[in-house]
Length: 151
Image (cartoon, rainbow, N blue to C red; front, side):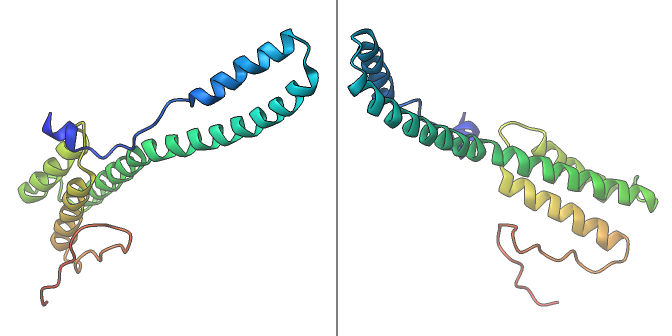
């Protein structure tokens, strides 16, 4: 419950009741043949409906963005696992431990993306070190604390 409560999911509000009330008013104008009142009301409703559709699309993007980040992290983790396997490191116990830790985070719900991102980065760094490559550089868009220790 604490993990779920701590999840940062944007609040999505329902449709505004003002629009529903105006639609009822428009239906009443139509029944009473009050065309001079109905026309401007329909124009206003059309604009408000477009605004509401834009708001709904923005809300959908805000809600689904974390899923896209999680999918990207999963892909990156699996790509590094494949790289390690190509170089004969599939059975390395340290890499297996790092991979399993990151995988557990990314395949659990809810997923703490900041912690999972750091776990994927640790796996990438461990893989790079096992291959004899220098540390994996930080990508500027990634969050989290930077390593300011000396080489």
